[in-house]
Length: 328
Picture 1: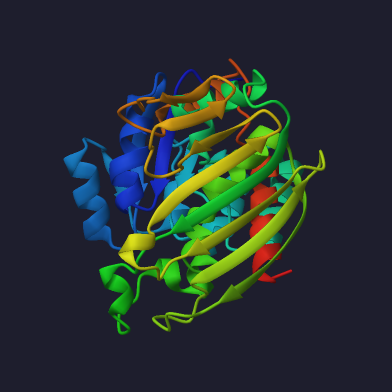
Picture 2: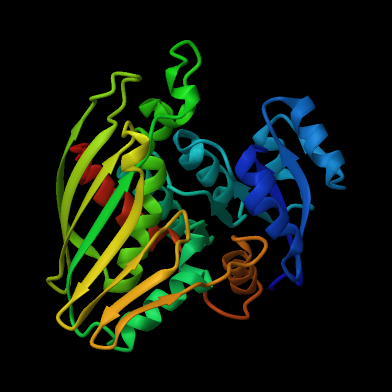
């Protein structure tokens, strides 16, 4: 029997939960948050009390076993995603996991195996698929505005962050044992996922990585190439120790009758170049960027519709990243 309300328990109370997912999970129809967990109990209590959430824990198993909780949102660093997801699904509770799905492709396959064995659903927070900005890009491609796509290019560069210089207390996102890699493993997933949403699965990928900034052990400069199931080819370059003047967030979809340029993080106007010249589209995002996807997840769990952001579709993104980084 399907529930009439999804009652979430959060594992993790960090910045993503505070600013992106948490408000959306509370604002979605037929969705409420009843418990949160952090290894720091004071942090969990503070988060809960500030948001009117009545329960808090410092033990994930206790939250998962809470009978009032019927779905789990996992917002911890990637190295613990598989553990918490498997614990939850074995308890019969569906999971919504922050991206990337896990720290390795192999851990993603473990999550999928348990989902299949238990029949419990797993979703991954590739919320950009559902944003109006990217729906517009998809519409332009599908309407043939650039003809047949023949090449895709990702270019992303940013300067080091202030915290990257603190060797005594580096961000977890540049610690491969926690994050799965460096900033590439944190930021490339959305880019790769969106391209697979547009053009189908990537079946071949390879790349080169280097550490040129020497600020941390993880790779900071990456070049990759890939081919989709359709035969479409693409490439990407990522640099996380660039000069400010080189800062870039751009994807180009080149067709035989034009080109589309857009960004993934800065939401610059979408630029369409074709026989009619250059046309720009400024698309506004909803107040809570994760809410369209979260509503789709909730509606799926209530049996109203089917959400496409499942563990199977998310796993291919980890596979592509691991191939580019030479992890597999």
